[in-house]
Image (cartoon, rainbow over all chains, first blue to last red; front, top):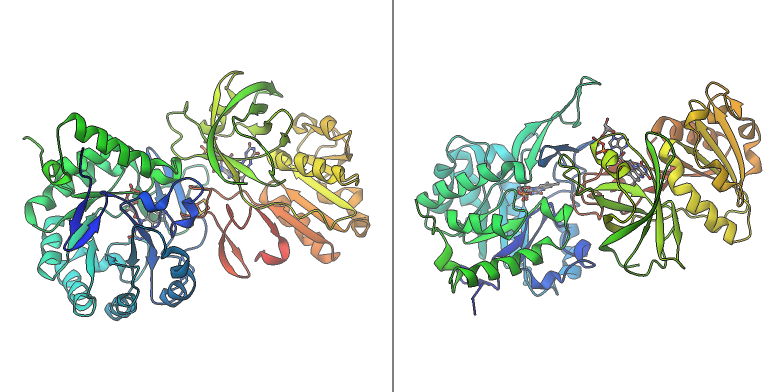
Length: 303
Length: 255
Ligand SMILES: Cc1cc2nc3c(=O)[nH]c(=O)nc-3n(C[C@H](O)[C@H](O)[C@H](O)COP(=O)(O)OP(=O)(O)OC[C@H]3O[C@@H](n4cnc5c(N)ncnc54)[C@H](O)[C@@H]3O)c2cc1C
Ligand SMILES: Cc1cc2nc3c(=O)[nH]c(=O)nc-3n(C[C@H](O)[C@H](O)[C@H](O)COP(=O)(O)O)c2cc1C
Ligand code: FES
């Protein structure tokens, strides 16, 4: 028997497979395909203080082995979430985690404060890395000083588990991860999307309405693996790895590089059942390689 | 009907020219309750360069045979690989997705199609005919070589054609067809085709005060409302074409 569970502080996850923010809706979108309660956790859509309409269409461009998106944090705001969405998702028997986004420190703080009171939300993921909002967002995640200001401010008000999601659009991700740890983050997740762009040569126009957007999918996996590996050398808090995971083997690579858990993002679009398949695949791998716990496998890269 | 991913088996292919194909595929699960206007999302496993699924309208459903038809135009690698598929091959299909045309309140429906926009209109015409109403259909294209499937509609509908060069039917755009001069003869118009065509039809429908539904073809990633990539700009803000659509009443769109 293998034990797939892991913990962030005192928060128990029955397995290390979570779904990534912005790729799994709020959960009910996938009810026809999987039993959402079987997942280790679900990170819901980026949630902001105010309602946001997001960027104009077109917001998506397919790229070699991946896609660019420029959704721009479309969501109905935290109050709508609490009033209308929370009741619909609180009965899932898994860790429902809200991805908190914003453009000013006080916005993050206010959203986090409101989430303190929701019993069925045991953690937040602080998104300081979205490339698709003009103001703030990624700017917070691209320097140690600005990351520090938002993380420490939210830490002061948020009592439960705080995960900080890191941007790959930086020269030294390990130093940002270290800042997050020093400011009281309980875990870090990485990576968010890589800034990219796509062009329609015939029309001589950018494909995305915003010109640039965030790259995800298998195209970013090597970058994500490298960053997880670098961050694992710099911090002691758990790392949640993501970026291009399409199957259990991809997931295992992240554990070996130093992640204690993983998230599945873009892959949900191609196979809506993939998250559950990955849980089974990880279990099979652990049996074959004689790992009894996830911990035994984390960082077991021989080099 | 519950959504799922299934491997359909291709039962028949009919290549209409070097770009257009009609495929019949059999489902391993019962195909009951599919609505006209709904679509499938196909994982084109054979195309190396096609990463995301491709949305394709449901062209027809035969509940007795448990089969579905799709009408596809090869425009890029994904649809080209679908065009190359043979009888016996499997189609990785996510379905049924999207809403439906609302046709039950229409006594005198007009269906307008252009290009592969004709795809969802056949199943709609069939459903309307099952209610004892004979719909009118106009198909528009550049020339006669680009007019497909009209003979398949003939048993269940009155079919008209408009071509830009006059090589078949009336000469001109669909909106210049004589049926449009007396648009008040119809109580609802259902349109699917290139966006400029849908907008042109929509404009006339509004001016003549006839209800009009259009089926949008926004690019998609997930097809199930989870990525928010496919949005249309509506009076209620950005809404997902894959779940709230693809069919919209034009009065809800900011056109
Ligand atoms: C709800 C819905 C129903 C559809 N039904 C059908 C159908 O029944 N039959 C059919 O043949 N096609 C249909 N389409 C369009 C079809 O999905 C696209 O043609 C297909 O995704 C193109 O993929 P590709 O890999 O062949 O081409 P790509 O390489 O992705 O694109 C080739 C070219 O086509 C253009 N293109 C891509 N997607 C679209 C689109 N959605 N609309 C307009 N231009 C596009 C691109 O800009 C590019 O210039 C439908 C689309 C939607 C959203
Ligand atoms: C359509 C789309 C929307 C996303 N929205 C968010 C978001 O709201 N908040 C966030 O932190 N990350 C968001 N992401 C980033 C993903 O959560 C993830 O970090 C990224 O896609 C890399 O993982 P993947 O390659 O497995 O998709 C989004 C990604 C996509 C493709
Ligand atoms: S395609 Fe993902 S929300 Fe419509």
